[in-house]
Length: 364
Image (cartoon, rainbow, N blue to C red):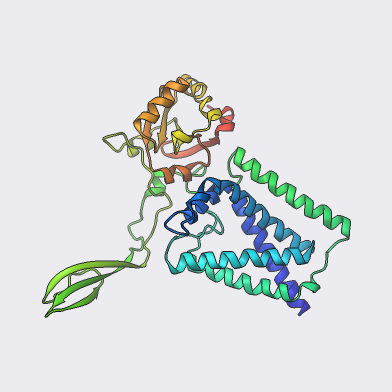
């Protein structure tokens, strides 16, 4: 039993630290996923959505800290009880999301590794078994070091986790796993190879024939059935190829300018998914950014999901004159974890990307 407990201790501790660190590297991204869970379409607790970021940071810091506590043997009873409570909750959550097909990606490993809800549920079931083993054999979880070093390491793990979370919120994720990271080409990320797998879809055709309703299943072709057509439903059996970049566009009120701007050299793009929520400290830096970019021969544009009134209000309030174009809010939140954030594009390739706190670090 002692060997089994120690193996479980290493596996659970390492996985909690790894999973927590991946999410702590991008707490804003995890908060967006929590907002999806809190929405009326999933758990229907929308009153928690404004607190998603705070909950995100607390959850992932606690996840990392519990992993550290388990590995060093600090307060084993508290640690195991906490792990058990957390894994029971997340097992329920992933089962609920998978069974009712509420979300496509659980967010367990951020953008590093995408797991669908059933895969995530399976992972949580395995973790639950391992943590139950720890719960039964908690007396075999002994500190690796003496009392003082163990306490110091536990405190250090907590402080460093909090500091790291704060650091990436004030700047950008230290490791960027998204399709818009520096060096990637957005246009290439939007393309679909000719030999890419196509989705497999089943069609359920409902007819009324001889006074009875019946359903015919096909792979898309209209069935030859005697009777009156009622309706058709579809179900995706297997997803096709999804390009890394989706829903990204640069649009004016009446035309799509994506290809035009992604072909430009020396383009500065100011990203604000919502001008109504733009950070004032970042907005105050946009005038100087605009002047410096223009002086060095760069074209500067803005990209937002906000309407015309908000665009005009922001330009007047902060004395800026560049044009704002439209893009999907979710796509913009994926491009850069900052409101505003700034990208330098060269023929669609991301050359620089900064948080508004680091606008002064841009090199023209």
